[in-house]
Image (tube, rainbow, N blue to C red; front, side, top):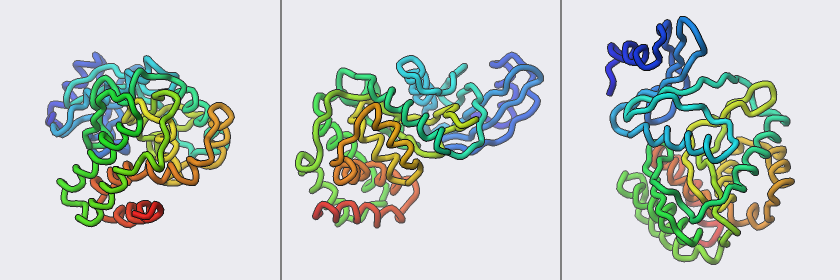
Length: 286
């Protein structure tokens, strides 16, 4: 961990500007997030790690999205294991009808970016958790092995998963071909798209932060966004005008996909996510 006493000096040396003020912003689970105001020029954002996670993974993901998509992610100016300096994107508005439509258009464009396989060229993170991404030809195989089975194991090792619930999750993992379909191509997804990772200004999406990216079925992203009711019908309408959404997604597949983020939330936030997991499994008779 970078000690507070040396952080200001370190930032000043990297930015080559006089640092006037550091103040905390809402942050994630693996770092402190600070707004940096200087004697001249635009403010920056610093993420300062605790030594437990490599912040260079987040920097890689932001740069990947900047290079391969039109999503408005912040530019990364400096990265090392425990420190990232990046562009500050201002915004403090709630998601309204216009910004929801804009978000739908942005993600539909992102989801048209095709990969050669499901997964990614390297492993990433979702929040504080390791996210394996070995390139895989089959989406259903990838979701079963690298998402559902993998995170079930992490939840068990964390002591958060009752044995009976683990057994139910492993049983549905064996039956995924009864519920899921292979998409036309591997689509680039943000991977952790919920309200706190969206910056809105003047009715537009000004910034999207904290990715957990990989190539997937595009419905994986849509399911996550529907899970916590963070977006309204305007988003899905705008998205569907560009990439039509199959009715079976709403009725069946989204509940299967959301076993993964529910497991992530169980590990990170605790037992209140056991009941949603149980309800999702019961929907399919497990």
